[in-house]
Length: 181
Image 1: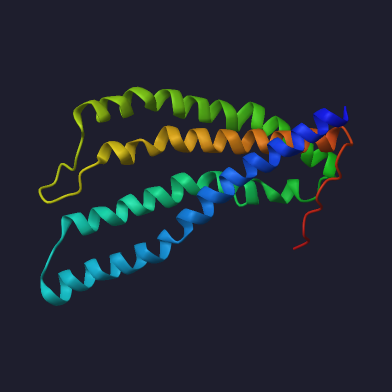
Image 2: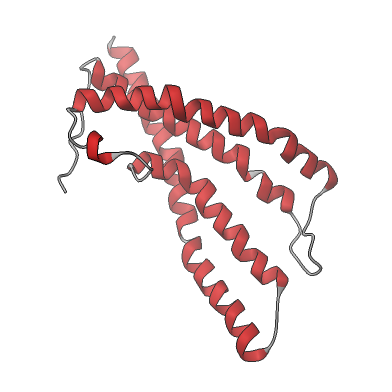
């Protein structure tokens, strides 16, 4: 029992670190995205210069932040949840909600997104898909690859959340109390 507990806790730490890394390394893109968007607007309205590639780079950064930040949002509890009920539950009940939510909602949805996007992504890679706009960025296939990558990273974090909750349900680790609002 001790060995499996230790393995579960090491697994949780490793899975958490994956979400932590992807979330924190892409978060800095939000500032760059704002600067680039301001540059696009300034170039267009002040100097009459348009740049499709610069505009598309904002879309690429936006996709990176949201797709790779999704697992981090799950890890930090910043995802969508009906907190008016969840917050008032006991730690044991919250653990049940988290386990069932991962098993019944998050993991099936991520499998659907991951599996469902594979043909879409592989076809994009096969043709080396680029921008449909003249002067746009290439590498649309890389952008589309974020779909299965997001599904994988969120799935890994859902497994970490489920393991953490199972340890609470088995009274192996204490539940983290929610901060009062």
